[in-house]
Length: 474
Image (cartoon, rainbow, N blue to C red):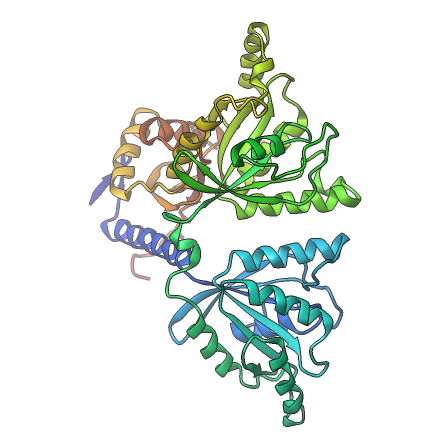
């Protein structure tokens, strides 16, 4: 018998929980190390049908109407023992605007973050002007590209397949997503093209992705220009100048970072209209694709609803976070005292975020952003061993037990950190834990192990009660 957090747990049950935790951690590591294949092509060529064929199950929504898929959707796939992540995308039309442009931006983002690309073409139609434009973009990329000639339901179309050599992407692979023709050969080609380790697996040496976010006219583009040392983004006193995310490789404190300047968020995505709506979508996508976000706040003005909305978006995305208080050169002593009170009230959700006072206009303290980014990312990647975590939690719960709920006091049986990016704790309990007690655990967890600059998620799994009269083993 083993005592855990003041309760007696059966040895076999404890071992089973431990094994489940280790399995979850291994799965998380496996998912992080899987290479990524992006499936792209113009609308209605059968990408989602082909995705379902590769997966061997119906996951992607399929309808005989162009443009059903709009967002990037990732699925876990396996072939001959090789696991990889499959990303289905919407129809890619270079130069598109409006909603089609937002969909195309998602496809381009999927391609830029993948390890290989599968271009799907409708063999019954042949190479269109859009296919040729997409092929030109892919030929310039440094990723392996496979060409799938879809809708080849019989040999009568093989002559049309041969004509697709003109796209300059190598041999076109004739397949039928609907009937499964040559799907095995396509999968063999896919696993041969994918690297053993994903491109993102080289995060230790490659540039980390940083999203610059904040309300309009807070100074995001000015900061990007100051960091890059060039006029990389358009700057104007009119709010909302930036619409599309702007990428820049920036050398900061001896390390290369990939900064993404984004559009300022005025309204909620679901209440925005026109260009603002698509800008909001792309900003959200930039946050999702980043590893850490710099949330720019105007230190010379009171915290606004837009500021808090941006912070909520970053936290809900599970990204590491640095708060940069811009225009600090305009802050006098009275404003600093007032700002401290505003932060105590407004930033109650993110007391853990790293803070830096800067001036994008003069360059004041912008170099301090690099250490703050490194601290936040180190916390985002940090994992606490299960044994060490439970030893600490045992002492904490013994000193401060969970509050009584419904006449009974829940007991914490076991805990583990089941994931990183962001760090996620799973507590196995005999009853529900109040939100206040979970916040207490998070606060004490941070005091003991650090994790500055990253959100920490706490999930509770309540053990189901065994029916009375049920014996062990039955």
